[in-house]
Length: 222
Image (cartoon, rainbow, N blue to C red; front, side, top):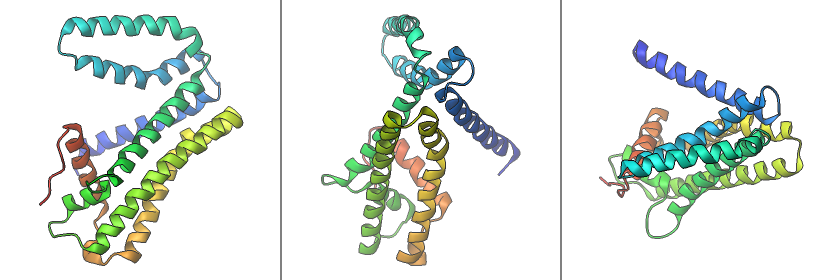
């Protein structure tokens, strides 16, 4: 790794940490309400603007931006009083979307998501043991995302905002990391060495799978 890539990765990490802190502070009601609301609404605004940018005619882009600005100005008094709700909806939406993304690959004639990723890593044909394992891992991630979404919802409804924020904003990242560690340990016990991918291989396969899905094309097979 060269210095620019290290600095870029460090910058991304620091930005993620800053976002986690800002989300926790805003969700618990600390700090300036307008600043907290602006930070909370930023990802939603970015997603909407990206969708508007894809419209074929510039006039609809302008209309969309004006409509978005009008809606934001009209809703702002309510948004600044419901910062935690915005973070909850983002947390819920991301987890449900990922749960559906992993889970729908378990249905129908296609292959599970982790199986497709494994095919992008290994040049040889996958064994029956590997096929069962990758299907099980896909199911495990599906259950994780939906379970975390359910826990987040229950805490948001019944627990104080600070308790919900600790789970949603501070613990989600470590929980995902714990899932990777558990999966790695299971891989060591259940798969022989020649069927175990490295972490870098998994990351590259996930990026290729995401890019392939973003283009709307079916996964390639060797």
